[in-house]
Image 1 (cartoon, rainbow, N blue to C red):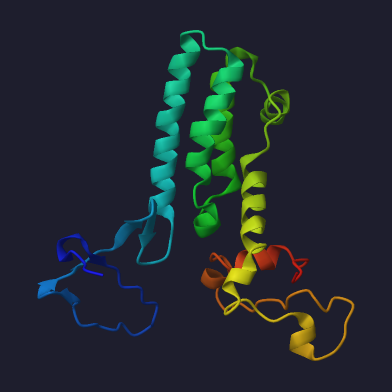
Image 2 (cartoon, rainbow, N blue to C red):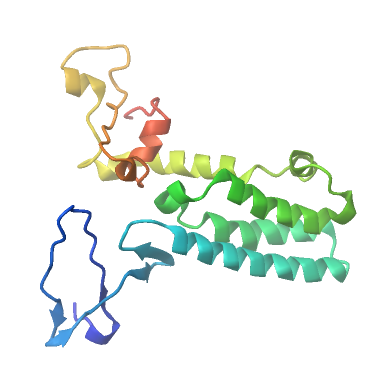
Length: 209
């Protein structure tokens, strides 16, 4: 595969106590630019593996989309159509690639985003967040994202090289929970909250099929 060096970027990720210095990458004699963050398939990856930049970007996008909803509301758009717009255009912005960056989106922030939409929708009729969700049969964003993470974990067969063995394979004994996977051991909070271990840490009932 031929790479265009002018469109390539590199990110150095290093958490060693003693800084390490690497040789600069080159492609066809052209030095590849080293950056602190880059966007890959719509997700902004930082060299410190934090997600605050990406979170800020999706919040900004969601707020712009909700401004459009506010304008449509003023022009008399029916509530059922605004709900469809929210489900089709705003919610996907907030949930895109969520299993990757789940550790940085707090439930408070997602509730703030969702309640803002509901306030636009109901105007002076808005009085309680949970009541507004029930009125329009909407699930809380934090609950939806938890299901997305668990769904991601349910396809672990594709990552068999890094998913731990079942308890039967780990112990060599026939147990009642033999087909359940062994608990993933995490030495750091960074790894504990990263993409792969999290679904298994919050759900010990995932079973090998």
